[in-house]
Length: 482
Image (cartoon, rainbow, N blue to C red; front, top):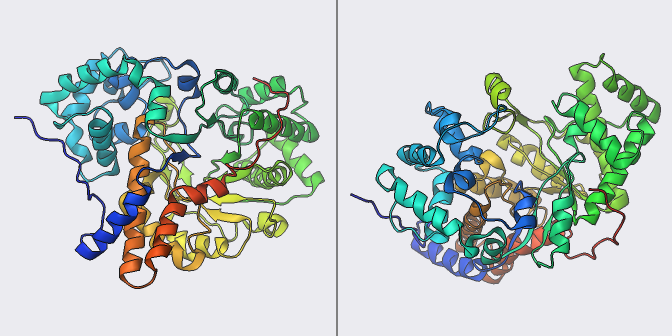
């Protein structure tokens, strides 16, 4: 017997009826506002070529580590889910992989992934029966049929979802031609890149040596000298700005910063390029480069995002077989007060610099992040991220940072996703949670109703526009490298 798929129109709103009615009214004001997605990892070639996706497994299952990490934890092999390894795509039939997913979909009950999947299945594809083993083929065939249509091409869905702005993430070694193709195509969708230089900053990154060679080729600079290396970053940042970028992104293991003299930085750089570097050298170089990137952001106006605190590739065997970003990254304790001080001593009071701090360590919300952002003009707090991109995670964030940092030292929501079809679902969750939080403050007499209405708009659209400088004049075109 099939089971119904139904989305509760009051999902995530407070249970108390008075507060729920306030949340409903606030949500009605913002539910239809355009989506601004200023940080994520979707593939720009989707929008450059506008080609149809081939099947449900390719789009919804095999690229989404939120999904397959849960299945892996229950003993399902990644090869059985069509997750590519370093050897390439496994020989598993995509339909068989989808059936495996359907047989295990109950594992997601109570998780954010369940909410996102329900929204995608119900709102995007129009299903009214739940996915399980008995409906797996019905889902697979229906999704594939729709994906083959013009209405489900990437650009059509982008427009249907009401996305106003979407940022992807590329490194200085990556090809930006898809972004140039998008801008030259005449399509009005605003898809831009973000500068993520980790591969040419982190000597512990497995791509470092190869990325540095490409870095040299793309910039024409002597990247093996300190001055040439910094010049190459400036050139590449200009290329990214020409491709629409307004922000940089830095996924370092820690938030450590440093402010070395030029002589000290040059000596450290020579060590990094040798075979004599230690993990301590690698950490110090990453720390120095955060400060160097801040200096460049003062020059070119790029917003700086710092995403620390993940122990990447914790499963060594899986990293060896399948590479990075396969669901084995684990949050770590992260210090911000001491780690950021060298950078803040130099730039903390600058009004020309904007740094958005993210965390995977919730213990620092009230103790470190909110007080820092509540004081330094250059700092703003990014939303609940990754493992905390969830209803309870969002509530904890608002509860712990608002009293000290307020609302206006935060930057709204971003989805940080590779799963394109889940973007409306993720933003809808954030809007509902924020409206519920504001409704609670109104019910307790801590906000007036008109203040809550203004804040609902700010948390949905206003703050993110300001934080990422989306309404500022685009930079003058510069000679762009691919």
